[in-house]
Image 1: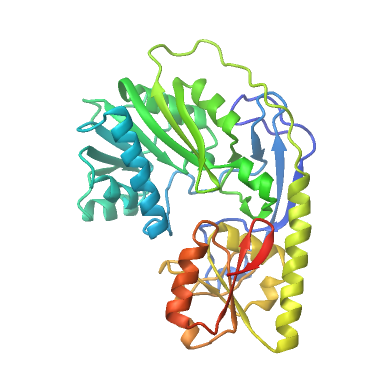
Image 2 (image 1 turned 30 degrees about the vertical axis):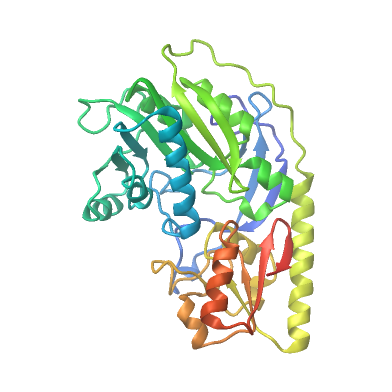
Length: 391
């Protein structure tokens, strides 16, 4: 039986929720030939009875050290990062300090940070992504924090602030990553950490947020416990953008000698079962209405939510195609459902009557693009929580 990735205690025998035909990856998107071998997998969700962490029973994906951000340049996300940077720098007087983004991808968020009066650095495991960041004029090197005693970069000067954006939930050894970061920070060094919020998934019953890439599902309490037990005092912790936990931390002067036992009670996961039932029912009803009217449908959003929703509902057979603005996804096929992923321009070659947006956090932005480029006649729908709504 698998052990908890945080406290290392044995996980319970039975999962609290099981998802069948889930995509095997959110990033290994198959081409036409790859579809012959690609198939959905079964995911089991467990809650550790010792530390409370909710986690999947799968192995980490092969690329868990890499940061791939298809939506990194969206106006929604860049504005969010600006607000976070401004708050952090102004509140804690961090002008002129050395900032390090751990897992910076192509440097999408570092480019936003460069607008502020700080020194911006980044580390990225994937060589090609690091090269792209350097081509953009950013100071980025190839590295991943996989040893507690590791020294980052040239190791000559510590960093004052670290940044980690939706990266920790991918890690099978989150304690090792945090301990390495701790050792590379200056005295009273600070950090900004974000992860997807378990609270959002449970409150909304949005089972389609679960994917094998996110091996850990942190709540406010379990994230705080992990950070505190690995050398950081949590100064601020809140939910942002409806679905994300944001924590501001400061390095403790003394390493904690004993891990604090978390008191989080076992959680009810009934909302996921109900969310699965409701979303399948509402999509069935939508598809029946479209069939009666002789209308066609496309899905917009080749992210993990769109992949999972397409694979676990009738969308996999009913939708004409899946739209996404990321060029590296276009021409490939959604894992498990095998819907063709196309550029927005494909609409003009193969028009549809309705578009279902499956990109939580970006729905309004995408709806504006559809109205402007496709016209007001196209019916725009979105998935919010466990319901289908018209925009």
